Image 1 (tube, rainbow, N blue to C red):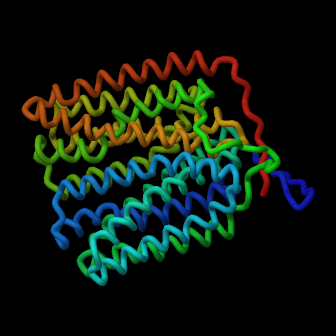
Image 2 (image 1 turned 180 degrees about the vertical axis):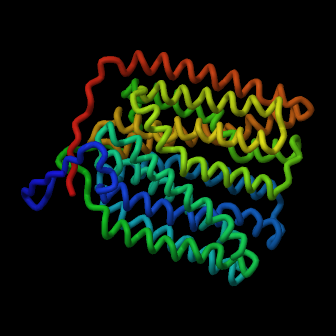
Length: 417
């Protein structure tokens, strides 16, 4: 690693394989672990609190979660533009205290049994600011890694998050037995730890503030970006069957008890931790769009297999197989967006991709639950459309990606510390 100073700033070039010495990647990975450890339990147990303690109807809880998805969309594009305009450092310093204040407000609203509208308001705002925080992390990682490192860097963040997820929900279950107040107080306290990490280790990584980013806008004129982003986001019609659709299928069709469902999701988290880097090593020479296509195909086959087998040993094996698809596709998706984003507009581009993903991803459980409702007596017809969509989109991603990325020169890598 070599650095040279000039005009109160340093420029750093990090050679391949030096991710552990990259303080930005390490700090963001640790922040992600802390974030998921705390906030995963709040997301899991807020529906339980609203239903069991406050007797809120299911439909209102569903509308609340859908509302967070809708509200996150404009925050994505405007937040990404602000990251470009104001710099990475300012966003990194100011986002955690805002989120911490909202979580504290929710915690004390629950403690004092305040109006539901107070709780709804805070909950609706936490996710949009968290979305901006995710965009910020993606931009900083892209700023501070070269193309060869980037997939591994995003993988490190995923592994850290899954370590947090493996503990957070279980801890939340214990805290909820004491008081739901602690379920939201705990992530608020942990957010202070995130804040300290950002203040201490995340410096400004935007290279040139003299470049004007223009108005707050979506990069519609960048045809390559829009087409590739739509194709990649469309893969979430398959990937998005994790969660709601799969849990309902296991519960109502395979008759898997809740404790076994918990074990299956724990297997998912452990498979990310132990298999993400080996997957990266095996596929190191594969082009990004081909890797995304392969991940989509693995997802499609893994879900389709559920139509034919249901024993618990098979379900464990199938979860591992599905997680391999997740490991193949997820980190390289953000690496690809980083490659096609202009350095001075990375916030805008990551925000735009988050917006497109936010438009498509919520439709995945709608599709899945619709198929479950219509074909609950025939698992083959539940998963066949998912297979067809997944294989078709995988083929399109591979072919269109090859055409649009052919002849592209690697982007330069230079950042400040």
